[in-house]
Image (cartoon, rainbow, N blue to C red; front, side, top):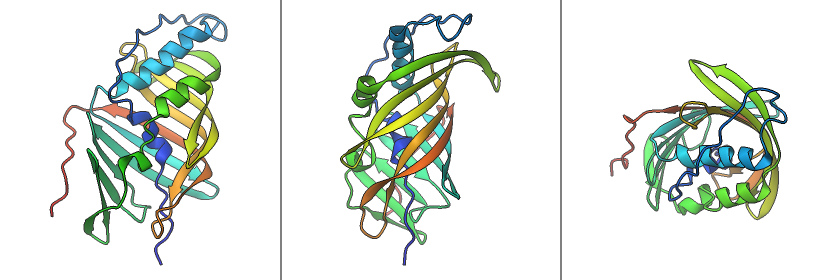
Length: 223
């Protein structure tokens, strides 16, 4: 019997703002980080980071902890509509989305899946985030790898199935380019049962790291 497929929809929510233009980035101060930015300035920087991300081919390496289980997932994205989601822990070891077609790899065989990409990628994620952003805090500047970053903390909501879900988030945004480079999500991920394609939420801590790589290519699997 196939095991439950831990297919993390929330990891993909931050990849879907494809048709949106980035808003202007706020000028950030590093002194007195808890009070140096208004709520409006923090909101603008957070939303701009997620919008700007999708102008670039990029890769997200994710570590998801649910109870005593840890799952690793790699997501690659090529604008405007190509995704590759890979995990050695999943029933579908790789999923490819190209436009409106979803492919899954299991037992070394590819097949088209009876899924609409909107079932996997919430098309309303940005609106939900903008509407639900609250308790935003600017935590100051750090060095992440070789980059200077601003660090934000905030709460938001997303939808899993038909239910709103609260999330606590911590976001690292590059000073030079305004792009997100790390994200921690304490809340839930959506899981999909490979036998029935039913989706439900599971409490999880997700840690994502992002890289931007113009050489990323995503093609449909061979017939």
